[in-house]
Length: 131
Image 1 (cartoon, rainbow, N blue to C red):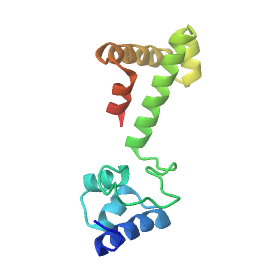
Image 2: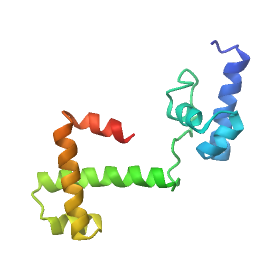
Image 3: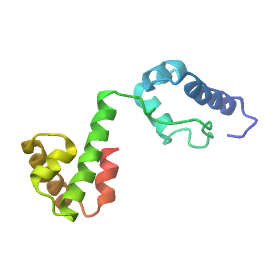
């Protein structure tokens, strides 16, 4: 697809609309006429990767508070905190205070991360699975 192709320009304009209107993935899906999973693929760059993203393009938007985004952010925060817990030899109480969660939740987070660590050979594999 070349820069002179009308479809190319239409896709550029769709991404510009996404930025200008700060659309959610669902709004973008309706705007473009694709499924929700299609919108996610486009916005994450696995589809339309040859189309340049506008300067202010972000996916997801920082203010997106959907449960999926919040869950992913929480999991990444827990992962980083558990790594710090192990490196700095924190107590479970210190970890709980750092995360702002009950002691049992901190314990559960450590156990979950340790299970993932033994199942995965590298940290990269686990982070890829979270995305």
